[in-house]
Image (tube, helix red, strand yellow):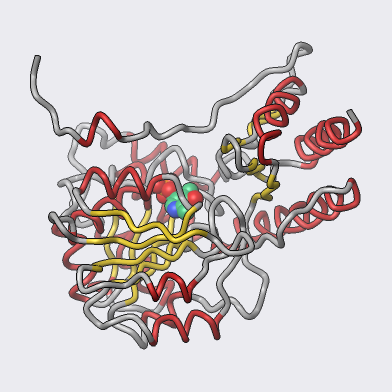
Length: 353
Ligand SMILES: *Cc1c(COP(=O)(O)O)cnc(C)c1O
């Protein structure tokens, strides 16, 4: 029997969202926060054309995409680092600080990948419980020790959809030592409509120890192609590039991301439609009697406690896959109106049962 790292025995497996089908054949996947829209024709075309070069390695530096991002956000290209999805960029970040004794702080509950990546990189996870479903930044600052190397702030938070606003973020960052990297995970930035939520890119411009994580998986609809990026000061981006596995971002993903930036107006119109649906879903749930925190992402969070798995089962019976966190609550992605209506009917029936 080969010997593996002991941590593998205690690491929870990442649970990806699963599709479910109702008895009469309906299936709505509201468990992975994906875009409900089909790919844009212009993006499909770019991928098809890139496919003719699949016998060649991709550009390891993803030059065209890096430059497109630099131009889009008005940052130097040296401040951009890419990865195969922002989860992989997060993994690269853990690699940059991961050594025995290093501590990484994040809120809990937050993105499920953080504990896995922390365990894999050998750092110590310091989890700070949410307060009212929101990052408790004072407690997170209190948790900083001389061993703290990195802090994740997931904004909006997955799975609660709640946000950290500008004034509290500034007060928090003022308490973080300069040698601790703060990563603002903004996977859902495009869905934010609250004007008090600062854009991480304006924070990073003032604070070299703050970096922003973004992805093409959600608002840009490229979850299946795996491409995400970090924008941060040159030393941060350079460290993240060093920990990237060569050729991690394949050239179909690079081409699709470049085409998506070119089609951004169309994609952001779709985001507007999802935001309208989000507000409708939340209001309807509240009218049904549920408590749903204000969400700035493309999902809603319902705290269900011991009823969580029953709720997910009732939704699955109607062909709606949601993401349950046993004993805590369920996260439900915003889909197309038909999917949302099916979910809302299931939620109403569960409440009245
Ligand atoms: C979905 C998500 C990501 C993005 O993952 P990709 O690897 O880019 O698909 C990153 N962070 C959070 C918090 C997410 O919910």
